[in-house]
Length: 613
Ligand code: SF4
Ligand code: SF4
Image 1 (spheres, protein in one colour):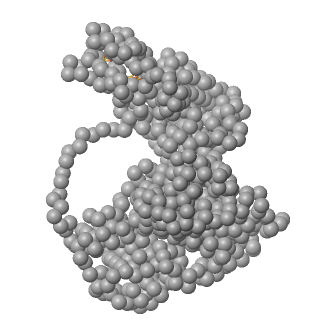
Image 2: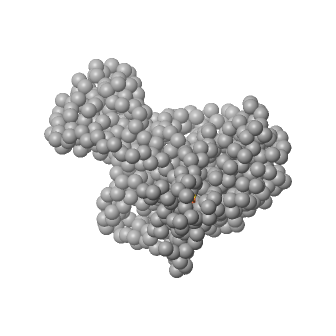
């Protein structure tokens, strides 16, 4: 087992763990009986570890259909007295919020924590939203770790406090904490109450938020938050370090950069490191502000702390200059780093010459052998061949590897909003502009949020082509299972689901370009809702399976005498294994080629053939 050491590690032992691995160990030390997630970077590794270890640990773990379901599973467990955990990437919390807000309002019996892994700089996301704002919207208490040790320990503490105060806790991680690797001293493993041993102590109406009960719960939630203020004041997660005239307030990953700049540049500064950031330790902050004329605030993304600190200064009548994102001293957009901290403090990075290197632009492309390449090639060909006959007002796309298809050479993907949104958008474009919009959606995303939107297209009689790119896995986040390829229960057939909504469904193999192109052409020309399932397993997964089985991968090659250097294969098909030689003729890199054979179908001169040199 890849992660066995996380389960077997003894108390006091130090392991070199990724932040997300530390969260998983925290779940084991915190006695989590039920854990659920939908995979999303930068939170995915927590699920990878728990997926492997849950059974041996006596915990129930599931990959839920989406983040909302994950929170609902965890909430039901927590109202039955068990400890539970739901975790997700930041935009996943948007999906979960409808249920999470009621869960926080009504409270829990067993400890419940939700980890939101935010993505400042939007490395692998559609935005860099700051989910700390949700702690104010919902009233959920919140902790912010700065490193893997804190990630583990804060989760254990959050579960304990959640149980004590009867309210779920939010833990806000960021990419640089979830994906940072550092030594972590292990604590004792908790005794995990077996799944199935909980008991729902409520009854009819006990957890139904209707008035006037929901208003009473609102008052109770505010009282719970008030009772947590002294906890925050005393909490070891909120601490003062160093001394000096300059004051700096910081939290999360930003603390690490502040710490390094202050120590490396020998700056005399007093640092208030906040780890419990809702509710804020008001007295601790007020006395800190009182000691300084100028206080800087460094935090990831929004001026969440800065706003809270300004409010405290105003309410306590403290005369202090607060410098942060609101005052324009610290940049608001993108991650904090040492450069940001140094320049914001008005300093220069010592001895580090500015290096400017022009790096060639390399748009992200599909992997060699990726089945999406065939789907996009065929769809583009079908749309172009029907130009003037079929109006395609927009190609709406969705979240997954296939999002990359908006890049050259395919250029298919005009609008993206969120998981599952491509189908709803297609309906809107059809209403607004007429014609037959094309909606692209992956298999995991279809189960996550595409089904209600497909029902909407069918029940409102929209004219659209829905292409479900089924590669048999949640590929982009690391090949996690989904309901179509369930690891533990019954696998759900996509075409059976589609047939129950609309009878018009075709299943094609994107490695067969002629069949796939024909299917798209037919679908585009027929009236009403058409669905094409383009099915072929993710090439990375297939290659790994082949290697495990000891099966050889038969590469393709170019016969130089036949190649006319037309460039179709390397310019318009753009498999990364194919490149142009100095003579313009195509070459295939045997180390990259995975033997899919699709390029042989695009060469008009039969210059690409199977077999070695
Ligand atoms: S498509 Fe065929 S002829 Fe054209 S560059 Fe590629 S291998 Fe050569
Ligand atoms: S067979 Fe052709 S398309 Fe497939 S991986 Fe090899 S070079 Fe790329």
